[in-house]
Image 1 (spheres, helix red, strand yellow):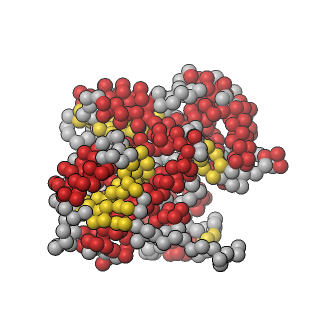
Image 2 (cartoon, helix red, strand yellow; image 1 turned 180 degrees about the horizontal axis):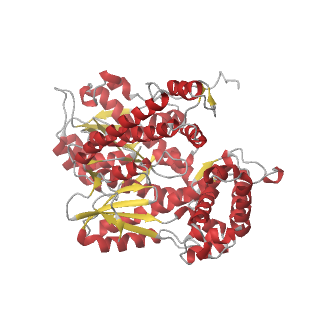
Image 3 (cartoon, helix red, strand yellow; image 1 turned 90 degrees about the horizontal axis):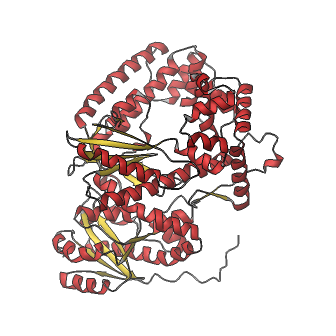
Length: 621
């Protein structure tokens, strides 16, 4: 690509950034803001966790190129306004629903301001979320990246002010005039981006609707959950840490005994030497650095039955990971202010539209292992007469599949509230429902979920431990019994080839390339990665859309009714609440209604509810 050397350079960045130095000036600004339709806001703090960071200042902008910074903490000697004055003067404007608010990752600012008693109203736009919907192929939706991409402007990097690593300082330790420019730019740039992104959203009515009706209202729900946090039993975790430590010592001793020598189990290189050179086990897979010892390889080696070592190493890695990620990390993440853990929920990470969480990531706690159960038992209700309530969508992805596939047999099974895996086994094996064995049901369950993830006969054979030919016949029989499923898949891939993307039930897009022409394939059951992603995104992404709608509606009910109950967490298809015992029955009724009526599908949505003193010991109501 040749560069046009005569092209005009980008225009210089014209900006008028003002440091607010007293309450009179702030009151004048508020008087002016009260007549504005739109206000860009940003908070500067001492840290990344909005629940524990201290407020350093607030930035405001309502016309591009002009922004104001209101400092409440700074270096000694620098003039600041008192936090009390700032919250009293700015509070009513920030809370007013009639003045639309916008920001970049505005959820963070909502939590920070809520710490100081301000519930921001009128949130209408988030540049990060807009870019996430408009540019699903982009991985970076940061303000710096968007400023560069859309405005050709390089923002002042935060590291220029606070440094990095061990010598990093906080913003209230930086000269006020430097902070003021940096902070004001953080309110100005989103306003400039809004003028570009908002018209782009208008070009796609479906994305506009998804943005306005789901993603923006969801910000308040996520801010609420982050603000609430969840109580954690730190004493139990300390005991657990010792138990896990003892378990690791025992596993280490067994591994060294099997190996006939001591070595560093955490070193793939040393483990590789033991497994493949000393013990002579076959190399299953190679990487750039040598023979692989990943979980899949260890699983294959364990199946050979020639040594207990691979299985012991799998076990060791599982326990070590849970100990470091959760058992030892959770107590460090408990807020000194609230004595609770406040996970961060991200709307802009997963390409399917699912939420992710971090610090801690609660989405990855194993559900079915004893260790995972123990960790969940550390998440507790706050008082002895309170309970946790967990409401979980039953088979939501299979119900979404049945909705899209419009397959009469599959839809009837859900309409009759049958055990879907047993029903599929009955159809595929051609036996009566009462004659379905546990092995038949297990096979049917594997194919039900295998369909969602585009599993091949080879993959199904591997997961069930059966012959590949039998697996292929099983898959063939499944598609014969449920022809609508295959039709849905073919339609999805055809549309994806034509458009270059797939869409969820609410119109969320994901770019997918390399979807092949089905007519030219010898084996149309063999899906490549792109094809598996395309089908899975439609199903998983649509399920994510539905739970987001449910969350918005549930919070609306909690805010308008006379509830003490609080929404705490969303984990995949499950919502977790805390509430007094005397509210359980009413809360269950309300939550089930809102979740089951989140959308009108071709099949009914179903929600299972459990309650208990902790997350692990929740039992059906």
